[in-house]
Length: 257
Ligand SMILES: *Cc1c(COP(=O)(O)O)cnc(C)c1O
Image (cartoon, rainbow, N blue to C red; front, side):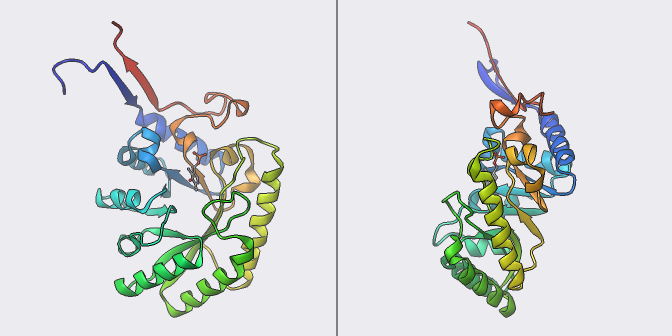
């Protein structure tokens, strides 16, 4: 492109992304895979990586912000996309109209998405996020019954469909950390409560890259892998990328002077 060669650049190997997705799917054979492409796919290029991941069988794409998810749709990316980092007043209606699964972690979010669904004349696909100990962006156990009850009622009125129940680990990159067991137990409890109350989620999920690689019982229906998709080891103690069957997708190159 340039007349002069670039002095420094990051080269992205999309074959590595595809191979990593296949390797991760083999590590979690009973679960579907979500490729997390937030933050411009961890700097690797969201659009290109999203397409590569889908080609290798990622059934879901995940982003943090709704704006990131909407950008994928605007670029023509089909299939399931989920986003979770909502703030009050966010683009709920745009997300519902773009057929994006949205995370709901509190009553305020449920209220906003119901209003957006009514305005759009569509049923919103929502995923209830349980805070099982991370202490960030999720419904606390004490508020779970009220949120589940309101979601079931919203489902009956037709504004929402609860497609998922999910959570996030705090320390899955430290195998054996006591919080992992506590979070799994809390997740099972909160999930069981939601199912007892009439939620029938299509996907139940909690595993990030380290949990996908080290904790099969955390796989449930879906694993949400970010780092590992790009061939990065979540922690040195877990092994090198090669030991984990992964290949770094990014190579930094520079001219020597
Ligand atoms: C970033 C993120 C992931 C992916 O985490 P990795 O450790 O990079 O696999 C999964 N779930 C949520 C909610 C995230 O924010």
